[in-house]
Image (cartoon, rainbow, N blue to C red; front, side, top):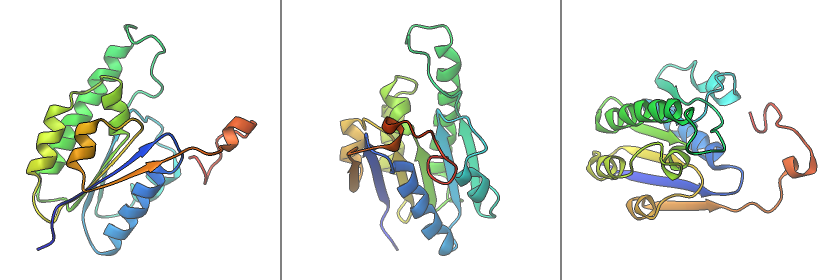
Length: 175
C-alpha cells in the first residue's frame, strides 16, 4: 500500500496550479479518480477546466466568486466566505471519501490567508486521510500548519512576469 502524500505548492511565483495540474495528469494516467476543488476562482472557461473537467474520472467543482473586494470589511465579502465554506465542505468530503485517490485543493492557501475558511478542519482532514491518497494544495502564503502537514513543499519564487511588462493574461499561458 502506498503512503498518503500531501504536496504543497506555494509562493508568489507563477506555476503553482500548473504544477498541480501536471500531477493531476499523472494520476489520471495511472487510472486514479480525482476531485478538483477550486477556491476563489470563478472562471469556468480556463484551459485546465475545459480539458480536465471533460474527462471521466475527474470531479471538478469551483467555489469562488472571483476577485475579492479590496476592503475586507466589505459586505460583498460574505458571498466569498459562503462560497469558500461550501468549497471547504466539498474538500473535507473528498478527503474522507475512498472514491478519490487524488484530491487537488486549488487556491486553498489564498482562501485561508484571506480568512474565508478556518484552518483547523482542513489540517485535521489532511492528517486523517487514508493511506494511498494523494493531496495537492496550492496558493500563496501557505500557513505554517499546512507546511508542517505536507510531506513535500515547493515554493515558487517570482523572478520576472510578463504581466509586469504589460503583457495581458493569455490562453495557454495564464488561462
